Amino acid sequence: MCAFDEAIRVKQPGSLVPVIAQDARTNNVLMLGYASAEALRLTRKTGFLHFWSRSRSKLWKKGESSGNTLRVVSLHRDCDRDAILARVVAAGPTCHTGAYSCFAKKPFPSRTVLDELLEVFADRKRNPSPDSYVCKLLADREKSLKKVGEEAVEFVLAAKGGQKGRAVCEAADVVFHLLLAMFAHGIRLADVEAELKRRRGVGGLEEKRRRKK
Image (tube, rainbow, N blue to C red; front, side, top):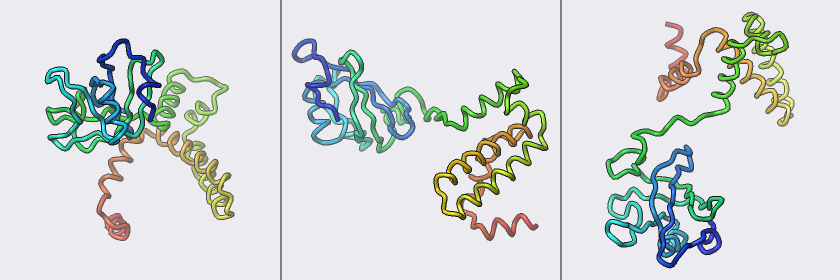
């Protein structure tokens, strides 16, 4: 964590600085509070986020009464050195209303590299180009399926041969081409996620038996 005196420019004694609490696991913003030098000292000392309550004119530890504390992972100053970003792990709902955050009832979906790939596929479909590898596979759905099999075989060979670096590259190729083939055949990633969720708590042998029925 950064030291308060080194990280923040205090305009005058007793002034407060805004502290943005961000979920370290999802990157969602949880709340905005204000901290004095003493509040930040306690934050660094205890590892839990402390604020200065402007309405009650007193120091307070987030979650001191509800138990919904914010454990600090790291503190970061902004470019002007007059605000702090606190990356935290929440013990429960952050908002006093019982919501996940003070800005949303539920976490905003995290954007992944798979989401970015799907956006690229959609863009190539809308704006086809003869020089695009993705466009060529989208135009030939049979070939897109064949590529999944080819890449899967290459991954198996690399992994079986103990070539970890190559296996990682081949695994990336498998995921890329599988996602592209799914897109080409109208299968959404959300459909696969839903199927995986359905299988929770179901043993592998039981799942196989169900498929045979």
